[in-house]
Image (tube, rainbow, N blue to C red):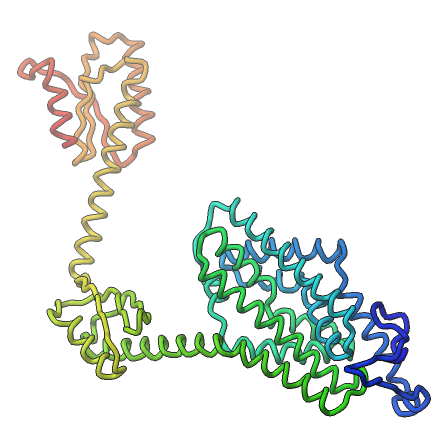
Length: 451
């Protein structure tokens, strides 16, 4: 290739030779036709080559991005995962592969591939380390969302790659932010790390397929757009056709597992919709579905869940399986658990009972606190205190003549203080009569009152 791209690493001044055909250009004619666009192309290629370099900045950003993505996936936080997409520097080397294929620059392609490989390895290792250290290793919705790529993901990546190239050529940094969010690159690598650490190799394979889908689609979209905008040497129609066929064949092979995954998701969605509709017809209007799980297992529809009913339906599972089988023409296994839901009267009774139990517990706590307050300093013996928790009444059996003036005043102050702390209770003095039993009667009376 001629020296149309000065100072671009990996792009030299020697004419380009593609399959024995020298791609020559007349510089004067090129400048006359292109005008001021040629220097812009050189600057664009220089920027792409710079962003594809493997340096300390790239490694630091990929480490931070992987750590953020992994924590976001474990927390099932979409906002945190989006933040990791913005930090990720992987878009640079992927665009480098695309422009390298368009310009047929082997040095740029090799450099970009090395950077991508290093970024993948570092991202997965960081994710594995974070997950290994984390006490939380549950499967979240954000993790599961990256384990079943479909043709829709391929379409998003292709469109995102086109938008990314357009943003690079027009220097629209805001568009690149949107492309980074739409074409998730680091979160699938974090999901690969999760699958490897937790032994969920199906998660690791699915996430790896999603990353491969995004990477190839973005790179090939960049190649096509760059070729349309006359980046790279002039090729014969045969070489151009060969390049196009290679891209289409690669995306076609990649589309096979994506199409199968999309078909499985569509079948599960149809099965769930059918089960939901038939179950709604079988239960009464006052019954409700508490949980419902529908999945495809070995070609059969497996259904399990919980339904809250007023009256138990003896043949609900068999009837539902028969109706769904007729609709979908496949085997159906149903395991629906029916639970009686509470009526309004039962709920009110349960609430009243709960309030009464809470009140009794509170009275018991109050009685213990009052006893402790009255017997402080042992001026009043415990067996002299009679407690009726049901009536919220406390009687202190006293013999004022035997107490003495100082002790009697102290006991009065203690009783007044306890009474002030518990105004809902009645705390009063009492006297022992000759007819009252002396030793165990107060204790027995207290136990009977608090029972």
